[in-house]
Amino acid sequence: MNSLDDTHDQALLSWVASANEPGCDFPIQNLPFGRFRRAGSLEPWHVGVAIGDRILDLTLACDKPGWTDAEKERLLPLAQGSLSGFMALGAQARAALRRQLSLALREGSSWQPVLVDCLVPQAQAVMTLPCEVGDYTDFYTGIHHATTVGKLFRPDNPLLPNYKYVPIGYHGRSSSLCASGHAFHRPMGQLKGDAPEPRFAPTARLDYELELGALIGPGNELGEPITMANAEAHLFGVMLLNDWTARDVQSWEYQPLGPFLSKNFASTLSPWVVTMEALAPFRAPFERPAGDPAPLPYLDSEANRTQGALDIALEVWLQTAGMRERGEAAVRLMQSNFRDAYWTLAQLVAHHSSNGCNLRTADLLGSGTQSGPQPGQGGSLLELTQGGKQSITLSNGETRTFLQDGDTVILRGFCERAGRRRIGFGDCAATVLPARTLSSTL
Image: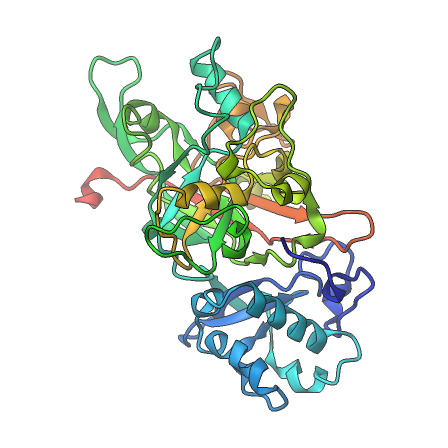
């Protein structure tokens, strides 16, 4: 588990003034990584660190004089535009670079005149995925989501017998992962419903799924499982993930092998990776409800029980096309917390590798939909509308059961705790475009 140090000090301020503003997602206590280039340019992607409303360009920063040889060595893969190369170095190098950058960006640092021209306004940057994701595995750790959805189809037995013993997951599609800010066409698919035969048409039940994504740092060798004692050392950081779903396509195709075309058309990731070190002040005990089975020994450890959970508030916001045309802001649909997940990130890593599967640097693990225990805390429209039976009314009078063309869904996440500086993840947003006509797809 990551320990606390001076980089987490609530009183710490930055010479980048915007980082000190209340409610800022990116104070000096955060320092997440992302890849960007200046808007309108064709320059290669650079790796940067978010600080306030600016990005510290690490390609430019690395060329500045004053770094020690060890510091420059840690910066080198980032200066070359490769976050993956740095991720593979592991937690010790990551923690050392975090403190190095924290010292350089602190108020009163002698680095201010050296680094000030390495700052890029976020408003003038185009973001991409923080790294080239290898394999993508989506889990199902949200027990409140699993229970609510299960009740829609199996009212008397919403959770299957394996749920409380096995971290359920399936392998997704990494090629259709997109960075926040993109737009995608409403997917086509086979729709069956109550008709005697299926038809091929645009999905009518397009939905979002509020998730966290965790990126693997160092991997493991094929045949060498990762134990719970070492699982966290293989985690680099987390980001927001919207794993879009075509519910009507899914209901027809998912038996017997699970989701396929209903989910692989697009998944959206927030552009900033919040490191495990930045999350250290927001640890929480991992607790199962009384009477639930304890995890099997290979999924259990004292450290996981005492501080394996993460206290991360998660939100979904919606801006319809009509709101956008009228200049109206997005409205919040719900809020939940990752602390309610039934499995921790360490347990996902340990289980995924328990049969000898080799995880690799920049693999992505999705958490599954993160819903809360209350009816209004559903992490999908499927839950909030009771399977499409009860529409929700927005503040401007519009209604929704599922997403309409022109809708923009925005996921937001943040951590806050007394005595600690609030940190955030930035927006994870995407917009639904109309389906392509059949003739244009041929």
